[in-house]
Length: 403
Image (cartoon, rainbow, N blue to C red; front, side, top):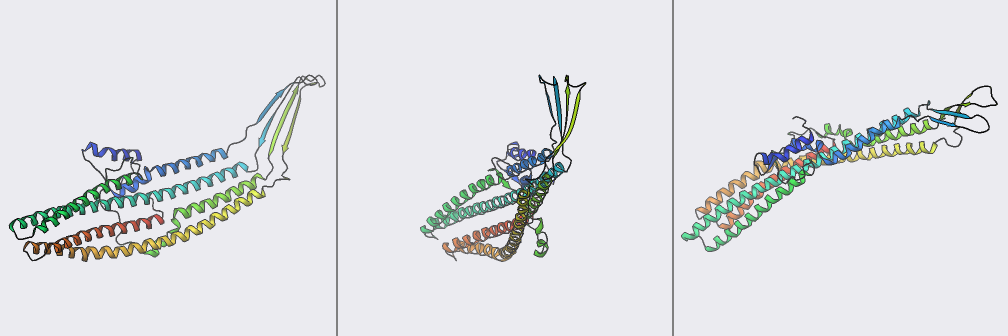
């Protein structure tokens, strides 16, 4: 798929429906995860912080300005002046730049964390929209069947082959089915609005899931996935934070070295001297009272704390990966059972009992129960597939998938 600019894709999503005179805007799973990275306001805010950290490298490399002075007096030289040039020659600026580069690496790791979290949130929102649409479809189908059943019962009541109570019962069931269908359709718009929040679409109520969520079949072995736990963005961020703390500690050590400046001056029109007087001196501080030991210790402890956090994130990621994978496999078994056994049986039973009712061999209650079982089986399959997709999204989140 092409990597479209975020603004172009977002504007296309908003413009497609009016341009084609369609009330809804279809969007696929792949487009959703791409837009989450390109157009999400959450990711944009983190990238802005990354730009701030990038500018910090230039700030750290700024060389101090020289100072110039000029003056006069009424006792000696009529004009005197001087210039002081800082001499940063012991690697302080280089160490500051290294520390800033390490801070940039941490900011970039934060961006990867945000991209991973937003991608997962957008993918979950797509699954929720997909499930809402499937529920709405099944509710609409159930309402249609209830309307057809009501008409059939009404015909039987008119010819005297069914009691009047059956007509009242089917009418009530049809009204309930219509209400359920209307509610399900409204929840689809709500799910679309929730999805729009993650992909940069202000009003996503017209969004509709186009196609199913992407689920691998078969899934890679758990052992193979565990070998990629170190790709978890949170672990990488803590490792980058540890390196940044060590870079700051190195910078603090470098600041303990003497800072020097070259001072040069002149004196003109001094009546006590035969001519102009020029002077020069090298000035440097003596690090007698401040060796920056506390600063170095603080940054060293910060590095140790970041490494400890990385260990905690590693343990958390391993546990979350195993849990999500096991849940994925467990739900897969339920999906297979519903798809190959439960749903076909419920469909066949509903059709058979409906035919039997038409022949006067089954009661209305039996027909309604069979129809409810068929709808419940379809909804259970859709729910199970959504749970399976959500579990795999969590697997990808733990592994740091951003595309």
